[in-house]
Picture 1 (cartoon, rainbow, N blue to C red):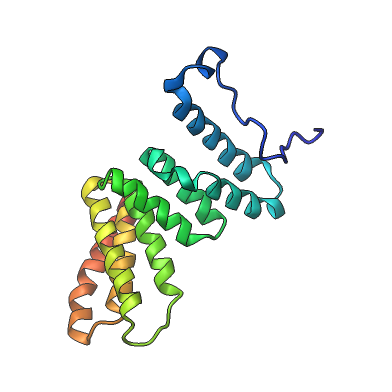
Picture 2: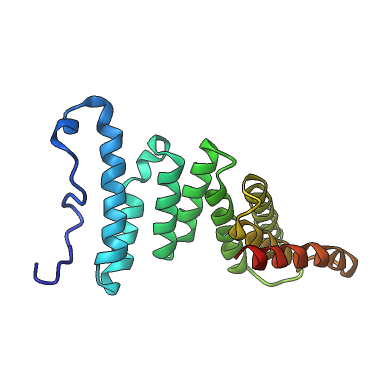
Length: 193
């Protein structure tokens, strides 16, 4: 095509050497290569109007193969789902990555941020158990991300954000106690970034 863009999602997006194609142990590897190419094509080469639809197709195309993917594959699918504004699917992929490797830094901080996004979509009432549960889970994910990579700014940011959101439903004294940790994590984020 003249502009070099690919519009057909069914075509092969990254060539796999011919000697690897027939090997039965390489089937999953080919799927990973195809998935990475599909996501790259959708996020980089497609028109913005087609991008959302393409990302939804990419995220849903391999949903039935969640258990066959590596944590990095789930993270890539989660990112693609987030870019398609499908935060629930993104969260499913981050959780699938964490089921395989609970210390995965990127899956933890991205999962925390996704949980915060879901919580922000719920009612702002003083007490909302569903929202509070999402924020508490976000804090757990963020703490794991900081534990797995103390030098990662994204993990510290996710922790500061989750502590801040979680403090919304707390009383005055508990908010004051949380403020020091929120500030410390925010400053750590700035220092690392």
